[in-house]
Length: 365
Image 1 (cartoon, rainbow, N blue to C red):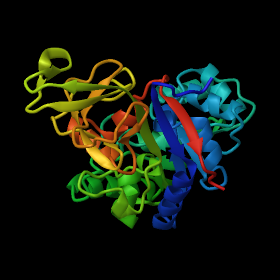
Image 2: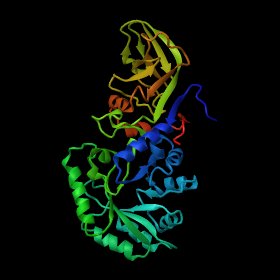
Image 3: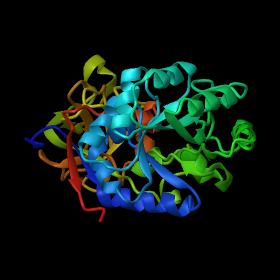
């Protein structure tokens, strides 16, 4: 049962998803787009988002086999790339049955594919470690890995991929170094390249290459600290909101919340919202966090508790029980909340609890 009598509500605008993928497509005109929908589409609902994007992207990327199976069994027919790949012959068999694309980043995975009882070939993206030092073959291993996969007769390898370490810092010298390293390796192999995430594809065209893999930008968030989503023509997809469940009058000198860290410097009117850190809102902030209610910003005061938080509505006298406050969205940017709490936008949207009701509006068409 879908309801929001007291708790929080995440309203997800599919028209905004449509706008953002159009922006991405216009920026990366020469590149095929793999939409990253891992971690439940960054908390937005992977199946709904994938269905909304069908026909508008060339495929999807998820982290694990389990995420891929859920999409395929949910009706997604487009290619699905498993970024962590497979880790057994049984998983390789499933990947072939479901027609998944898999990232291969170790000889262990190659051996799993070789040992699998397959009736067809698996589409494999060979991952190269160009500097992130997390997953992937070294430059010296690429030819052997590629020959082993192709020679097995159980895999085709159309793409050489890597992942950038500092793409959100456009001027960082490692970005170009990683690109040149990947291009140098691929030059003699007659193989396509995939490197760019959201930050890279918005940085410079040369990073986009044959395939790009946007994630955060699809959901209307800027991948950069000093460049806003609005300046990139991206629209926020999720609006997190919550009802006022109580209003308190606090005398000068009284405190609010656990620990008594906030003390009223004057007589204050305080609204209590039915959202807390169990819902995914950060417990701590720098003391400058706000929500948006009745067309004004209201400061978050006191410690955020498990299920509730307090805001100062002394100067917003029309506020009453049942009013909705925007936690983040069009008026309170997700990037602002991330800055106030010393977190990343990624962390905020992926940590939303299941008890936060998701409501989908509009139609991507």
